[in-house]
Length: 427
Image 1 (cartoon, rainbow, N blue to C red):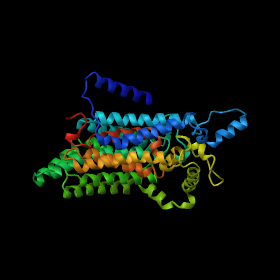
Image 2: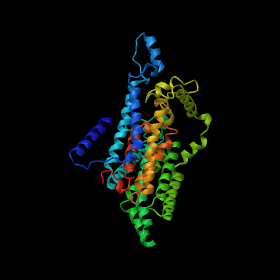
Image 3: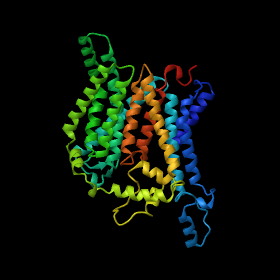
Image 4: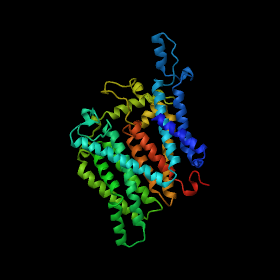
């Protein structure tokens, strides 16, 4: 993936140099997320090298040198290979975002991105539902883990990760359905004409999106993922609130759209959300291991709050803190914020979070300021709320399929968050 993204970045640069495309001017508004991202990437690279002062190196390097009676180079990172690998993934996601921002200046391209994510989500959801109803319990040609038998996971192993991916597709489909509905409701035509236009919009070109919406929400609910379902519903709610707050939709129309989405969501939750409801009801702190993992991760953070243990090294670092209360193998903290703080250190982890927050604020400004196509930054708001909330209890953004899809969505959303006079490449 990193190689493909790198080739695309080079190709895009060559196209600009050869004059086949307009020179892209980066607005000043790009710096709030570009600078923090580059600083985090630079720090992760430093963590993976042996050029840092020995006082910065993780204590295990000194212990290993003594045990092996050899002068090991050492580094801030416990595992430099994993740190550089994690950095490569982060740069790939950044490259996808960069391409989306620059190539989705035209609304038609942004719409194509969101439509493509919706259709891809439909196909993955259809496969996941087929697997469950056929009682195959397979992930392609691999047997599904026993603990996820009967749950929709599609081509993912973990049901929580698939719930996040399905939620992203659901938000894109919801946005593309809401856009024509809001335009129709905001028109000055008679009620009869608007009713006919609504029916035509739903049964005409919008039938595939409506199908995707129904299949995706069904598949998401049948994942049996508490965090994934809750985060996705909050993401859809944030999308609806953003649309209702925009300058392109009247308040009454916004409330009507919110009501339609709410009724549809409640209907599907009542139809296929019984298992998720039971899991919420059965949830107790006594049966959950996550609070223990969070406590032990916090201990690791306190031991090296500034330097971290190396990006991508949670599995190695956690072994130093785990105790008899922890069962099984844990290679993720199930809280992205805590895991980033452990691996990168608190300052770099904060910068990475601030970069994502800046993207959210840019989309929010687009919703409030733009007069057209506000649905696209609104989709970015919904997607960000989804991944931000679910990252509190899981590790979706550490799965390449989810991180790459989110980078694509937020890139297209940010590209459409500027007004026409501010669009990159325009004078």
